[in-house]
Amino acid sequence: MAPSITSSTATATWNHRLGKHLSTRIVSLRPPPGVRLENPIPILRQLSRRQWMFVMVAFAGWTWDAFDFFTVSLTVSDIAKSLGRTVTDITWGITLVLMLRSVGAIVFGLAADKFGRKWPFIVNCLLFIALELGTGFVQTYKQFLAVRSLFGIAMGGIYGNCAATALEDCPVEARGVISGCLQQGYALGYLLAVVFNRAITYTSPHGWRALFWFGACPPVLIIALRMILPETDAYLAQRHLERISPRAAFLQMAKSSLKEYWHVIIYMVILMAGFNFMSHGSQDLYPTMLSVQLQFSPNKSTVTMVIANLGAITGGIFVGYISDFVGRRLSVIMACLLGGALIYPWAFIRSNGIFAAVFFLQFMVQGAWGVIPIYLSELSPPAFRVFIVGVAYQLGNLASSASSTIEATIGAQFPLEQTSSSSVKRYNYGKVMAILMGCVFGFVLIIIFLGPEHKAADLNLEKAAQHQEDLAEMVQQA
Image (tube, rainbow, N blue to C red; front, side):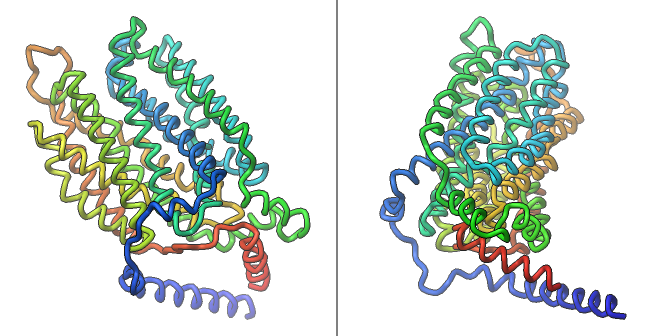
C-alpha cells in the first residue's frame, strides 16, 4: 500500500501545483507596482570591459552562425540551377541543417558545461570554416546535402554557448537589453548575408560559390578574439565548487536538474518550436518570394531585405530592453499581437509600401526573439545552462526544420501566370506564408501565456550549486 499512497500523494501534489500555476497566469503578467522604464545608458555602463568582451565575442559567433545559415536561403535559385535541381530540392539543404542542429547542441552543450565555454566555441568556429569552404566546392546534389548536414551539427552547438558567455556574468539590470542585442546577431547575420550576396554572388565569376568561400574567412577573427579571453566567472565558480564539494559534481548536479526541471525543459522545447516556425516561416522563403513571385530586381530585393533586418535588429533590442520592466512573457505577447496585425500588409502589399510592412513585421518577430536568450537562461538549471538552452533551442529548430520546404511545397499548389520576362515558374508563396504566420503567432501567444517566468533569477553558479544540492536532497527524499 505504501507505493500506492506515495504515488497518489505525488499526483495530488502535482495537480495542486499545476492548478495554482494556471490560476496565476493573468495576474503574473502584471508588472510590479512602481516599475518604470529607465535610461539604458547607465544600465549598460554597469558592464565591465571584460563583460563587454564576452558579449562581443558571443554576438560575433551568433552573427556568423546566422550568416552561414542564410547563405543558402539567399541563393536557393542559383544553387538549384547550378546543380540541376528544383528550388524545393535545395530547400532540403535548409531542412537538414535545422534537423541536425539538435545533435550539435547535445554534443557541444555537454562539452561547454563540463569543460568550459571557450574551447567548444573555438572548435565550433573551426568547423564553420571547413564546412563553409566545402559547400562552395560541391559538384553534386548529394555532396551538397552531405556538407550541409555536417554544417547543421557544427551550427547546433553555438547558440547555448553564446547565450551563456554573454549573459551569465551580466548584471541583472542589463540582462534584457543585452539579451536583445545578442539575439539580433541573428538578424545582423541575415543582413550581412543579404549585402554580401548582392556584392559577391552577382559580381563574381564563381557566383554563389564565392559567397560561401567568403563566409569561411571572418570566423578566423572570431577565434582569435575568443583565444585571448578567459572562461566566464560563473563557469570558474562552478569548477571551484566541483573541487571542494562532491555533491556539486557535474553529473550529480545534471541528474538532479533533469529530475526537477523536466517539465520546464519540455515547455521550452515546445515554445522554441513555435519561435523557430515564426522566424524561419517569415524569412527563409521570403527572398524567393521577392525574386520569383514578385519579380523584384536584385537591387530591390536587397533593399527590401536590408530594411526587414534593420526592423529586426531594432525590434529585438527594444523589446529585450522593455522586458526588464514589463516582464518577459508580456513583452512576447505584445509582439505576437502586433505581429499578427501586420501579416496582411507584409504578405500582400506589392507597392513600395512593402518596405514599411517588412520593417515592422520583422520588428515584432525579432522583438519577441530578443527576450529569448535571457528568458531561457533564467528558466534553465544553472549548472546545466548551455546544454538545456542549446538543446531546447535546437529541438525547436528540429520541429520547425521543414518550414521552408512546407511553404515551397504548398506554394506550388497555387501557381501564378507566367510572365514573358522570366522562364522560372511562379507560385503564390505569399498566401502560404501569411497563413502559416497567423497560426504561429497564435500558437506562441498561447504557449508563452501559459508558461512560467523567472525574471531576475540568479545566474551565479556558486549560489546555484547550493540550490542544486537542495534539489538533490528533495528528489532523494521523494
